[in-house]
Each structure stands twice: as structure tokens, then as C-alpha cells.
Amino acid sequence: MYFLSVYLNVSGTDILKEGGRMMMRFFAFAILLSVFNLGAANGLLAQTNNNTATDQVRIVIHEVMGLDLRNNLGGEARFEFTERQQVEQGMELIGASSIGVRSNKDWNLSVRAESDYFVTEEGSSELPVEVLQVRVNGRQDYMPLSGSSQVLQSGSRGDSNKPGNQFDIDYRADLMERYYAPGNFRVSLVYTISQQ
Figure 1 (cartoon, rainbow, N blue to C red):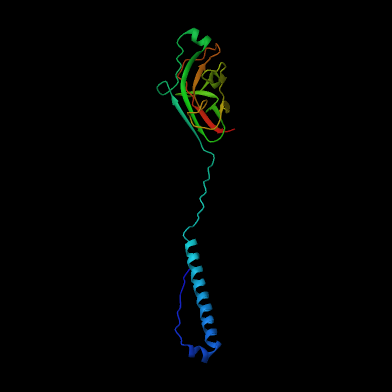
Figure 2 (figure 1 turned 180 degrees about the vertical axis):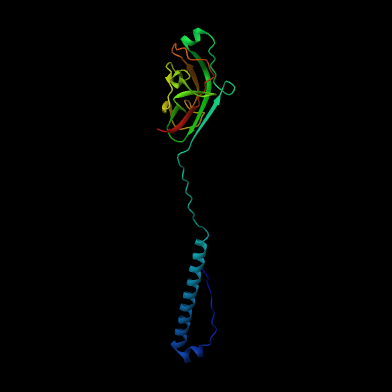
């Protein structure tokens, strides 16, 4: 706010001649000067209020899930049946693979075989995929595989360091005492993570 002081030097005769007119002019001038100073002061106040501004930032997080699978046996889980006892009792591969889950939602892990039968170098075979079974390491029961997805494990939101979001997979091949023809059979397993 500005303050202005005005001094008038007038003689007594001027005041008497002009009477109250001089006084009226002085008051009018003082009022105009006050109005001008008040407007200028308001302009300065408005400028000092404009030294801040706001902006909005929005973060949108969608469903994010990740699945890491590592084979612990050098590239593939491999069963070699060379003895009668193996054919009749089956074979296990404990801790064959490791799985890590990262998810911002509770999740299900499903597994399925790419086909209902193993294939050979020559093509299809009579060896059904259900002779291959899978489980999460530490569980007692195996689950026979099929061409349809089946839930193998469920867990809660978090990264692979969260308990239950990283685990090993065991495989079991059980020929159910059937003597299938010799051959080199293979099948691919598909693991899929989805929200609960």
C-alpha cells in the first residue's frame, strides 16, 4: 500500500478569499489519491497471490502379473525307463522346475499339456499325457495332467519374495504297469497365471 503526504503552503488571505472552496478541492484531491492508491495496492496483492499454481497427476495401475519358470535339470525334465521296476512303480523328479510369481492381484497358477498324447519323432503316439503327474513340492498328492487347464497353486498379491509366491515343481511319470512300445516321447506343458 502506498502512502502519499501532501503539504500545501497557502496564505491566510487565499483561504479567506476562496472560503470553503479551497478546502473542498483539497478533500476531493485526497479522496481521488486514496482511491488510486487502494487500486494499486489491490493489484499488488493479486500479483503476490499468483506465485503458486496447481497441477494434477494421476496414476493408473492395471492388472500386472508375471511368471518365471526355471528348469532345474539342465533344460528338460527327463524320465528314462530302463527296468521293469520303474515301469511298474513309476519315477519321480523332485524339484524339477522352479516357479516365481509376481502379481498385484491374488492369483491362480494353472497347468495343461499341449496335447492329450505324447508325440514322437514320427508324430503322434498311444502314450497318454495323464501318465505324467505334477505337484507343488512339499505336497503329498500328484495331479495327473491333461490337455485342459487345471489349477495347481493359488497365492496372494506380491512379488516372488513373498512366502508362497516361489516354489518348486515335482513331476512323476507312472506308466500304470502298462508296457508301452519303446520310443522317445515328449510333450510341452503350459503354465498360466491368472487372477483369482
